[in-house]
Image (cartoon, rainbow, N blue to C red; front, side, top):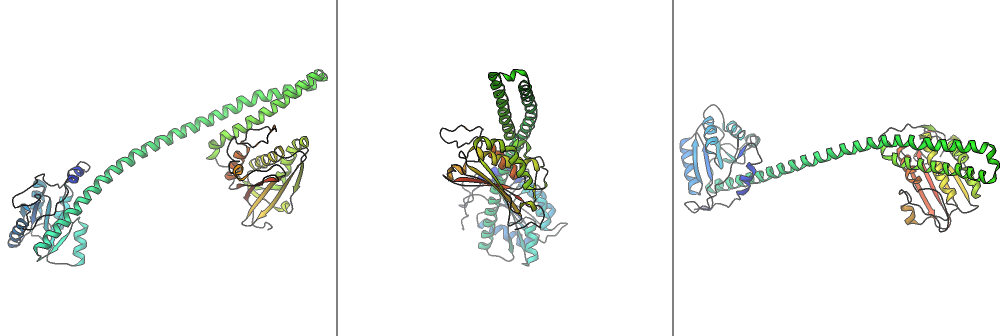
Length: 428
């Protein structure tokens, strides 16, 4: 007698719990009469009585248990759903109202069981028809016992793997569902936090700016009164005004940094802007700072008078002022700052600010855009929080541009903003 191949049956029972449709499983008996390793229960559907009898005898000789048989499709469906065999041998062309393929489809709708089709024809159309109905194999009559046994074992093995895959898919779907729910919850919380942050920034903007503005006005009024004639009083008034201005600048920078995430999703209006005009405005606003430290500002526009860039005017002015302010404050006493504007290949325009300061190492350049990072020379006192470049890079990226940086230790640094050019008639 030919021995049956051992098939792992644990997955069948497990898979059933994950599917709304019951699946075939194997009995837990370790031995059956005849020496078979496990009793595989087979149901035979064949309308030729002689062939059906011969098939049942072959199955029995191979160690399988024939748990039932039928000659009509509709009868087979009813019996199989009641008996629940481990495998079905189904003739495709049956007498009666439905064919073997249709009977297999009806069974599959309520009970998952491997079906092996039997036929006297082997055309490709027949194979496709059997496969589309969920068949796990087919046999062309007449066939040998070894073909019958091999086909059944292949069908059982495929069915086992399908059950395993079904269980894994069910577990994955459950995990994906849970993870998706967690991510949606986290996203909702983040959106709520962002809205709260926006409201907070709006309130802080008002609460901080209003008293600082009043302090500045009172300092100006005191400076205009007779009390300012007193040297000590004038010194105090000047310090009040200077400190108030410095505090206002620090608050402005902190609010800009805090608003980065809040503004990231808001549209930024860009238009054709003359970069040379922006540079002149920015230089005028930092000229007094340069004069205090003896820094010479040089504006080299070249053909920049004909250049325009796609940018937000206020954002570009803020970036250029940040680059100029840093170049002045981190420069040598009596050094220089050079501003150049030129058109690059690829329809991009670059505004560069170069200084004659101490320069930065490669390691310092890599962290120069991190918030609150500053490289103040030993013994020097330089105002600021170290967030200007962080905000500048964010603004440049929102304008579809970038910030570039290069430096030579001991000689100076160059920071540039590169933006898309406006129009196609820019000089190269």
